[in-house]
Length: 233
Ligand SMILES: [Zn+2]
Image 1: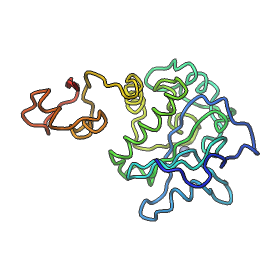
Image 2: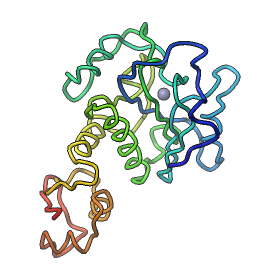
Image 3: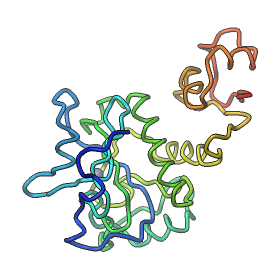
C-alpha cells in the first residue's frame, strides 16, 4: 500500500457530507496502464470532475494507492433500496436492481478505482483482483462489515457498467471468506474456486505450494479442481 500526497486530508468535504460510511464501492478507471497516469488522474480529477475520485487506486500490479479520505467523487447518486440492502447485508447474490439515483453515494461509500480500460476485454490480473479483495476486506474488517458491504458501481448507479468483467458475487464471497479469518489467524481449509491456482492460494494464505502439495497429497500441483477442499494446516 502506498499513501500518495496528503491523502488523509484530500477530500471533497467542503462540497457535501461524509459519513456515516456504509460500504465499499468498486470501479474501473477507464485508463490505460501503459500511460502510468492512473493514480494521478484519480487523485487530481479533471475540470468537470475534481478529485479525489476515490479513496484508493488499485493498479494492475496489485498496488493499492491511497489518494483520499473523506468525501470523494466516485459513487454519484444511487438507489436508497440498494443502500438499505447493503447496510442490512440482507440480499442474495446481488443487491436489488437499482433504478433510482436520488441517494448520495459519495457520502456513504469508500471507493476503489481499479485500473482497467473498461472495454470488457482488458484483463484483470490475479494480483490486482487479490488486492481488491484485500483492500475491501480491510475496510470491512475495520467497520465490522461482511462481504455484502462491497458492491460494484454498476450495482449502485443506473447506467454504470463498472467494474466490467469483475464477478462481484464471487468477489463478495472471497471478501467474506477473508473476514471469517482472524487477522493473523489461519483457516483450516479452503475450497477451490474458479480461476484459482495453487500458488495464488498459497500466497493468500501465507503458505507455500510445496506445503500445500504435501498436506493434500497432491501429485500434480497444477491440477486442482473447482470445489476441491484443501487442507491449509
Ligand atoms: Zn465507477
